[in-house]
Amino acid sequence: MNVYKHIEKLIKNKLQSVSEIADALGEYGDAIVVEVPKNRAFGDFSTNAAMVLARPMKSNPRAVAEKIIPALAEIEDIESLEVAGPGFINIRVKAQLWDRLLDSVVSENEAYGTSDIGQHQKFNVEFLSANPTGPLHIGHARGAILGDVLSRLLQKIGYDVTKEYYINDYGNQINTLAHSLYRRYEECFGRHQGEAFPEGCYPGEYLLPVARKLAEKDGDKWLDKPETDWLAYFKETAVADMMELIKASLAKINIVFDVFTSEKYLVENHKVKDTLDYMAAQGLTYVGVLPKPKGEENDDWTPEKQLLFKSTEFGDDIDRVLARANGVTTYFASDIAYHMYKFERGFAKQLDVWGADHGGYVKRIKSALSAVSGGKADLEIRLCQIVNLEKDGKPFRMSKRAGNFVMIEDVLDEIDADAFRLFMIMKSADSQMNFDLAKAKEQTKDNPVFYIQYAHARANSVLKKYADTFGEPVNPQCWKDAKYYADAAEIEKNLIKSIADYPSTVEAAALGRAPQILTAYLEELARQFHSLWTAGGREGIRFIYPENRELSTKRMYLVAALKNTIANGLQTLGVEPKESMENIKEASGE
Image (cartoon, rainbow, N blue to C red; front, side):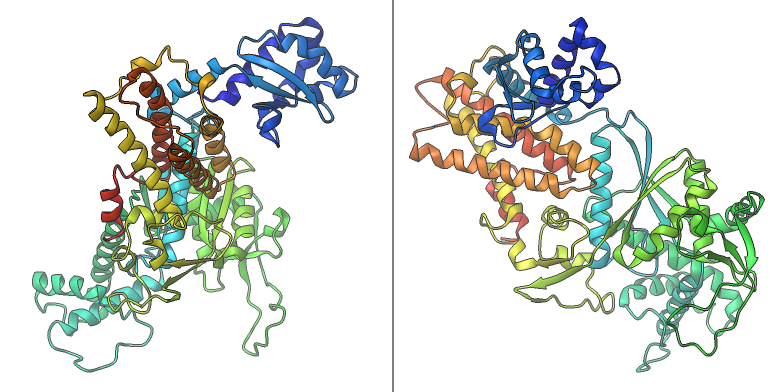
């Protein structure tokens, strides 16, 4: 139950039933919304209905408000209405609505907070897409987790989401990977002992297990053979093993992709060529010479005729190269073909999550996809800033297994995967992050991950204590006719209203592509519950009354709704809610 949408629907239906007002609604009805007033002391909700209708009714908002209030007062769930400011209408609702809300939060369970905004439209979210040349490191983690969480949020509001990984398995970096593997393969037979690893190759030890498997399987059959004999085989083997390594790392942080698309497949199946041919037929390309790059001192620069995309006609700064003078296509050409391939598969809506170092690439790919799709494809790109990994305020050690960077597994040796996920999305993706592993393990209110999980565990312990006290778990059926809100303390009423904010918070996080909105909400919800817990000793607000089962059951109404909301929010973020303090301690490595 979304209380905001519920009140909004009741208001619109009531206004529609009044002929004088219904005529004025017309095209303006969709602009009427219900939200929280700036100061909740003024009311439970506020609506802009009078301000929206002022224009079609040819009157000022306050006069319109006075005219529509009598109609709105007939709505059963509304207790009182008051005009405020330039024409907002503050609304107080009856206690019965809050009681129904608590019941719906518990009964809806995982469905609480879902909506149909997306109308089941297909939505492709492509993220991470790290080159398959080594294991995943901390630099990949933030974008990977952001992409996964955005996918979950979009699903929550009704989109049919496909999570996609684009495998860059074509080009020079894959040739380098194969040469690196071949070098490790030679080492399995005692060669190159004490020699430095070739410059430009990938020096991490992660290729050693792959090389050993090859040596065991094929023996020395590839030794001293010409490159033409072994290159294709070593490329295929290396990419396959690196992708298995990447998938295993992703599984450890609860990320599973729906689709893997290969750049090599696109090239070999002429998708790139077909796209360039189509662009030429549409008059989107030409053969020309780009001017010398500004601000660059390059005596070796020579003008060359290249195949160019008319990207300046679509908002870009300069026209872009699709194929070099020698006929070799660029990465840009492959990327256009790839995004067009997604569009041809039915994904008019696309979201890419990239590292911040790709910011200069955004305008050109958006302009290219708009051009080749005839403006029908909607491509959105979110950039992710870097993460500075620390421990006790000092840079975290590098991984010998992977070379000069920290692997995801290195982080997971220190903290729980769920905590890792939450910390990676607690700040806006467009801001740099200093992530201190030591602080992430602290069990204090200063650690937001602990604070949220602790609230869920506490709520679970209260429900367990109820079962221990009365010999059976609380029966949700007992809540159907419970009257709880009217007699609740102010601190409880505020918590109930915060629980009601959950669906709109999910929508804001999804539509704003800002999961930190949801994590901040969960942290505040946890704070309110911990304050209520503390009030038990200070104000005598107890959860369990052994002598009064009816009152105890009513109290469980709120505890169960709180627990479900936190669990729902964490699961939407791809995080497992902890059931007990023991689970939290295990997660922090204690």
